[in-house]
Image (tube, rainbow, N blue to C red):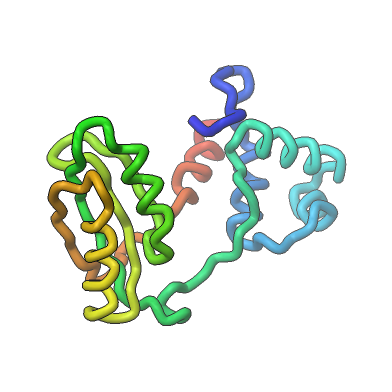
Length: 166
């Protein structure tokens, strides 16, 4: 759970929250007034919902959707890292200093960290992998290159389920 998030079942998302989040997912540049018009509720209601969703950590911001390939980073790879005992935080801090590392997850199973990284081409990927492997505490890696993304990151099905469950 993110910092500031509540674990109160009375504060669960409802259909209006889901409709608002779907609207902003589809059109993130909409203002509060336009959201209220499209949802058929008062402007103050939309603002209060947005404030609550941000406070709870459900809504982390309004970043633009960027196409990394269009920015020149057409190669995506995933690496599973095995790290020395007790060094996870240190390795994560080192990885955060590598610009091409997009996200890192602590995992169970074969490895300790799952790293998503991007590169401009195969030579650039080799450079990025060398930086990742060079982080103190990294003992072994296994890297896979993504060939395509049949299902991009999404939340729509979860929000739509809220609408049908209501």
